[in-house]
Image (cartoon, rainbow, N blue to C red):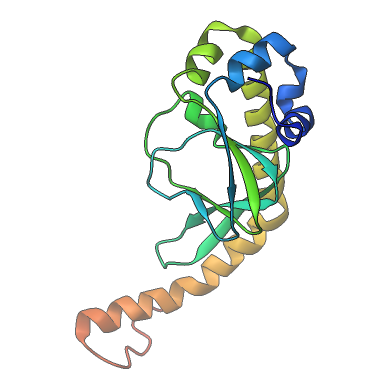
Length: 180
C-alpha cells in the first residue's frame, strides 16, 4: 500500500529516513495513520504503549507526579518517534502521550515492528539512535534544571515533615517538631 505524502515526509524527518525503501515498507506494513483533535490521549499513563510517529501537529510525553502534577518529559512534533522503548519492553508504561494541537500520528503494527527490530540490524540501529538521542536529551535537561529541582526539594522537605507531624498528632499547628 502506498504511503500518504504526509506520512512519507514525517518518515523522512525521523530516524527512519536512514532505512531503505524495502525496510520502510516492511516497517509500515499494517500501520494506521489517524487524525486526532487537540487533547487526545494517545498513550495513557499505565497502559501498554504502542509505537507512534508524529505525522503532523504537536504532542507531549508526560509523567504524573504522586502529588497529581503533570511533568512534561518531552515535546514531539512531525517526524518524532514516540514510545520507542515499546519495541523491546511490553510492560505498562509510566509516561503518557497527549496531543497539544490537532495532530496526525502513524500507529505502528506492534506484531511486526518488534520482530523486525530483532531480525534486521538496520531497524534495530534506528531505535538505538532514537533512544540514545532521548537519553542525551534527558541528561541535558537534568544538567540544566537538576540543581534547581534538588534545591526546591530541599526547601520543601521541612514543610512535608511538618505536614506529616500534623497528620500524626491531629494538630493544626505542628510547630517546630521537625527542626533539622
